Amino acid sequence: MSDASPLVFPTDYPIKVVGRRDAALRARIDAVVLRHVPDLEEARIGERASGQGNFVSITYTIVARSREQVVALVTELAATEGVVMVI
Image 1 (cartoon, helix red, strand yellow):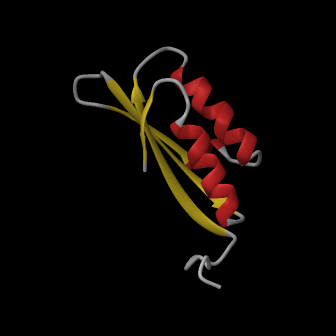
Image 2 (cartoon, rainbow, N blue to C red; image 1 turned 120 degrees about the vertical axis):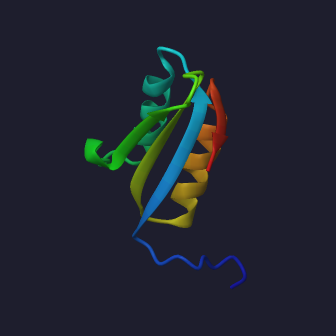
C-alpha cells in the first residue's frame, strides 16, 4: 500500500498554528481543533506571541488516531480566518 503512513496510530502529534493576533483568533482555532480532537486537554496546548506581538503561535499536541484525522484537521485549520501557517 503506497499511502501507508510511517506513523503508528494512536500517536502524540504536535500541530503548530501561526496566525495574526486578534481577539477572536484563539477561539476560532480552538473550535476547529476540538471538532477533530474533542478530548484534547488544556495542558497539551501552548501559546506564544511573536517578538513584536503581531503574530501568535499556538501548539496543540494531539493524540492522533489516524492519518485522515490529521489531514482533515490541518486542512480546516489552514482555511481558518487569520491563520497564516500550519506546521
